[in-house]
Length: 83
Image (cartoon, rainbow, N blue to C red; front, top):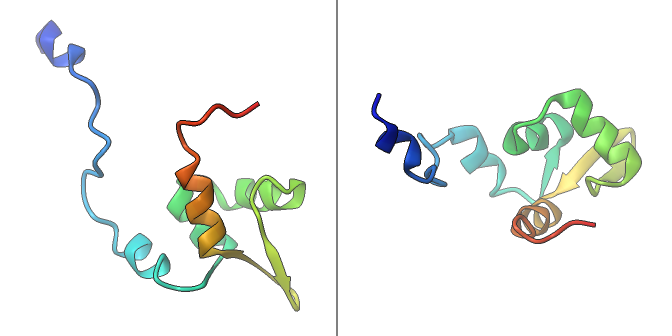
């Protein structure tokens, strides 16, 4: 590989479309494992973030779900400074 190949900024476009992400973002809520998949984190990390409040979650009976709108807001804040 030449040095110029490393100089290019990485593309922010996904390499391929993910049908799971496309389907889940159309619903009002996501399960924790679905949200973890969308965020690219492990299921256990998603549960820990929900427990600490860093990932907004709702308890519906015994289930924890993530409102899609909250996840979109969280992802919309990417690039902003987090203190």
